Length: 206
Image 1 (cartoon, rainbow, N blue to C red):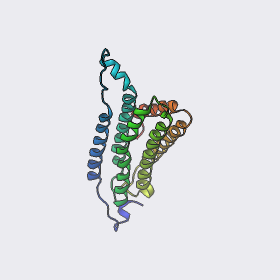
Image 2: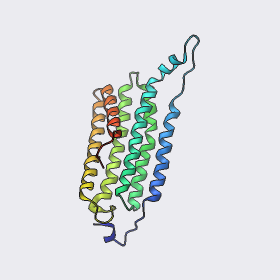
Image 3: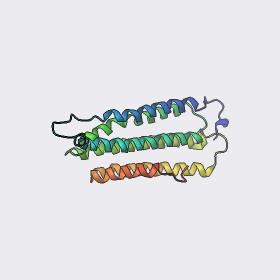
Image 4: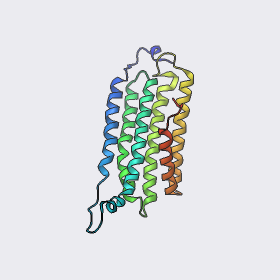
């Protein structure tokens, strides 16, 4: 059912939602750098020795930066197709932004615990956060696409199918990384990095 077929429901253009979301995501991705601090340089050591101590933090920063960047691109592309929003969509988008801003915390945890005995638990927390975020993207899209609820008049069926397929793939991919983290934290880290690279690369996905 299209937006025009239900005149009694309050619909809005997504412009303010997009502007607010862009601002929140920009702040979230900027705050990642706050967790990087150069340790005190000990006598007889160079700055490179100190930088080596925070390599795990840098690795976590890079993966999270790329992933949040992909989240922003996905959000931007999503609202090329979603032409209207309602109260439920606003709430779902707010929950999605909650997860995106939360990424900073598991990133800090992973950076601190990457080379410790707690690395496995840190990866479970880290990949679990991404899995929940992917689920929120999927829920927002499914809500918008159900009977073309928020897609405007006559959306292209192939576009709707492609987006639905891609969000399902993303969700399954991050759930797989989450499952792997229970078995091999390092493999889960590699998979998470690989997913970030994969989604960053140009493709024909909508």
